Image (cartoon, rainbow, N blue to C red; front, side, top):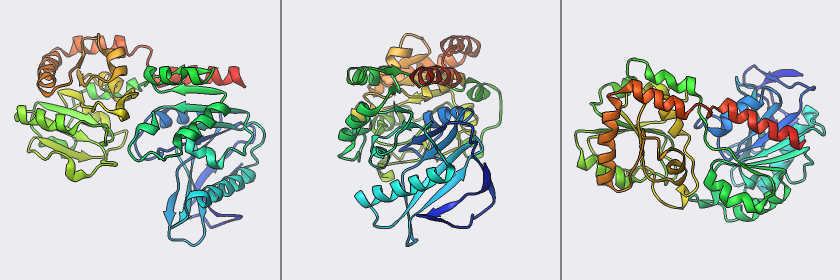
Length: 394
């Protein structure tokens, strides 16, 4: 089945598409509905890597959190992605919140699933337990909870999150975790919990090993460069960043990524700290190529207690030595590699960067060691292992 899109639905009736784009639904394939707190087009990370691969074998529906609209009636935007994923965005009128928002999302979802003719083969894949409020009436063939983060520890987490997670753990057939620390926190709460730490698209980031021109907004920044990309939020240790910049004013700190949930005015503003804003997934290797050392200056707080940063293997695939604060899963996985150095206090962080800069002067040795570490860490490998778990459970 195929039709033009993106279709925009009011409850019970459709609108004319804004622009003709092909949306494909194969009646012979099972359907996987992924319910995410992250937007498909925001930062390319775990959900995008996995769902774009599952789209090879499923009709893949990716349900995002609602966005307010000035329209009087709610509607559902269906936006096809080149990966084969259909991104579904509920558009709710301003003021539609709480139980009303949950009811409307349930009606929009039911209407779309009915239109597609989704039958008994539905697989539900949750990244956020909050989506249970408008999906618990569904009768899926299989339910997966991919717990990539401890969302309850994040700033602004909904009060109901822990209660709904408990319900989701009762309903789920499989629970995956984004790292070993999360696995240890969840393994006693479900009989089928499996750790799947951060993986990497080695070929994509290995492009950073090749000589190339700097992106225009990075080209004028001096050397040596310490670089970070990712969401800039409460997980970043901004006091550490400021102190490192003060201790070594000759070093240039480059931060690539959107600022979220913190006031941009609270970020340190020094001549050698450069905020370049968010970039696409395809652009990241080009920025990484221009750094001497990749850094992960994460704060030590509740929001980072269980993280397993995807950027660690990405930085290594790009051929860069790494300096990180002592995040548990980073220490556990990479602490003895010799090319990922761990330091917490600013003075120790500076010393570790100095050692990493020396590593960067021997790129062949660095690349060989990185390739050994990354040998079994591809997203393709992780997806294959997850797929086996699903097949055994269906």
